[in-house]
Amino acid sequence: MTSPRSQKMTRRQLLQGMGAAVTLPTIVPASVFGANAPSNRVTVGVIGSGGKGTGGMRNLMAAKGQIVAICDVNKRNRDQAAKIAGVPESGCFVDFQDLLAREDIDAVLIATPDHWHILQSIAAIKAGKDVYCEKPLSNTIAEGRALAKTVKRYSAIFQHGTQLRSMNATRQACELVRNGYIGKLEKIVIGSPPGRATGHHPEEQVPEWLDYDRWLGPAPQAPYSRWRCLRVPEIDGLAGWYFVSDYS
Image 1 (cartoon, rainbow, N blue to C red):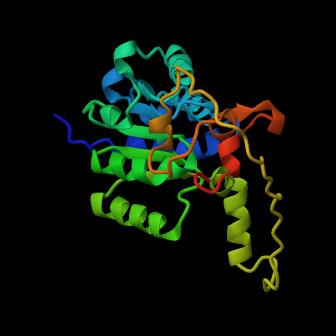
Image 2 (image 1 turned 90 degrees about the vertical axis):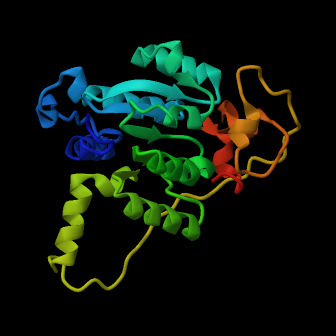
């Protein structure tokens, strides 16, 4: 019987491939993973199956990762992702801890709202899973350091989904600068898009397909509004929580 981390090279290759695949039309060739018998594939659980989660899941499937479980507090997202990946109802969960309890999962893709990233990543690593987690890593420096310590302590593989930093072109540019190709670096100019406020919105009834308490999780208690939890056409289809400091 293989140990929980006996497939480290395979898992590392799969998770590293994710960093590029989410942004680029790159598909990791099947040869990277050796034999593709089901027993040799990396089994993956998806935690958070909205747009980012489903996109990442498709890339993992293209790279011959085997999606065996889906977790989302939004039943509509969960059902859609399960249909795409061919995951049966027995592999669908509302509570991410139930997914992590499965011993047949090698790694997890985490694509939940930002305020959940650290807690779910640390819990996954402690459960013996390797992790690909979408950006941002955390909302505070202390949280990020706690995760780094956990990764080191458990010798886990952790891939952070900051795709631009994972792209070959970006890495090559960094190497050129570090090697003095452009001469002495005098100044760095950074461009950052402005934030926006969505304003105050009245409390609404929680939809029957959403477990709002689990969506909030570690965040402060707040009344439900679609502007808080969902993608909203009025703000270009972006999720309202992008602009709320409790979550992002």
